[in-house]
Length: 179
Image (cartoon, rainbow, N blue to C red; front, side, top):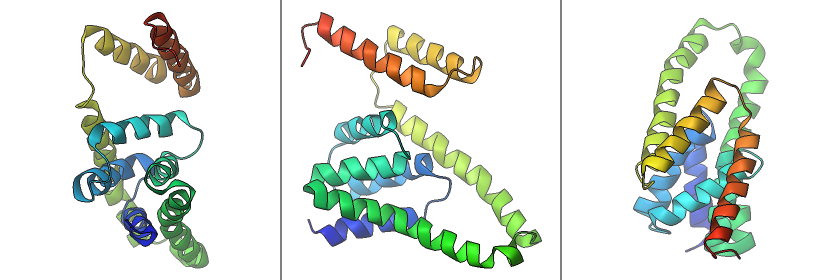
């Protein structure tokens, strides 16, 4: 694999994805797992989980972990640049034209059309990642409790992530699988 191939892959994903990092995950998975076969689905999901638990945007974190896994520090540089440069250029162009565009009826309608597509991409990402989780009753209850805590009780996901890390460490320690 060449660094340019890694850069080109993430640049393409960054250029053609609207809606942020979670909308990018299905495209990243399709490229990295299905098309390029750089890793299997289980490893990809592990990297996404790690990216979610890390501070920062999930798309950039995912690019960091995939780049590092594939090519070390050089891979990080090229995957991250590939994922952020399209947004940088698009924002630069929009900012230079913003005064003319901000009250445009056409631009407003374009964004109204994009919103449902982005929501669908995020939902597809949730289902794609969720189908690979081996569900049992305990895990299902855990998912429901976390969803209620975040959605209804507005508990910040930071606390949920920290609690999940501690719970995972505790469970593995009890099983004798501690590092």
